[in-house]
Length: 347
Image 1 (cartoon, one colour):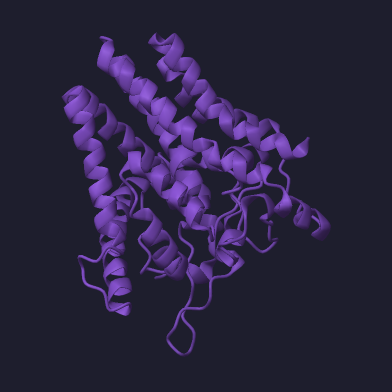
Image 2 (cartoon, rainbow, N blue to C red):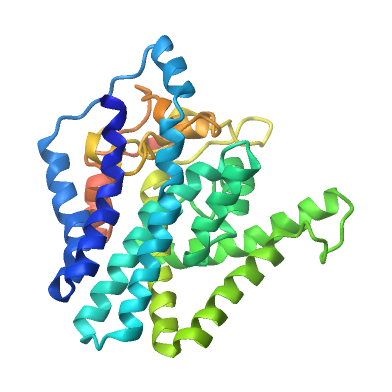
């Protein structure tokens, strides 16, 4: 029965679906649940730093249930998106209802879309990677697959990494620098990959061109079928999903830096270069994303077997709660700056 705990990850789309059915003020049920109820539950439930035994790891890796729990997010995400589009297209919504619906769908796109896409993007099979890229489409962040896998995991916790927040950098500043630098970085990585294979920019293997085509086709189709109001809804919902991702990126490596060795190269990524949280609710809802150090240690390691490392810096709160605190920079700096190892703070 413990294996079924990850069904809780579907609680966010479930609350979203209830809100879409009942409408009105319940369009705001999802943000209230995600950033009110879940943080409250994280305080109540105990922290669990325990790891699996070797025989348990082997058993869980063989169980396809954990993979299907990821795959099911695809119809859920696109189903909720389609349902929301139909509401915007056919109903007269107040401004408050419209914003609530945007926020609700954006949370689903971020948590059950981009977050699951991140996990699938590290898989070895083409089919799973395809599902991951598809989940990135409605957030217009398909380039994340390239930059994250070929950029972030190489440069994490260095100034060269767009997704590593600097010491004393606010989350609002980080949103702009990370989004812009990751997009530019993805194009640069793509060009290098093509050059390495002696392929031209217009090669069929230029994923960035395909991503641009697919995302543009999605927006054009929405506009032609449903008009400008639905187009605005889809754009803003995608932006909300992206900002959720970037807020998570912000807290994952905030202020942590790999130092340079005597050779001038950065030390290898270690357990101390990611912020972790063992708060059980956040762990489950985010498919163990909060055990981020182990993910960087071996990126192909599946979520259900990620370990906690004693030497990893631990957040005082779960990821959902930390995201809220990050939105108040003075409070975030007060809580987090004293936890950063002194040797990592650049003068």
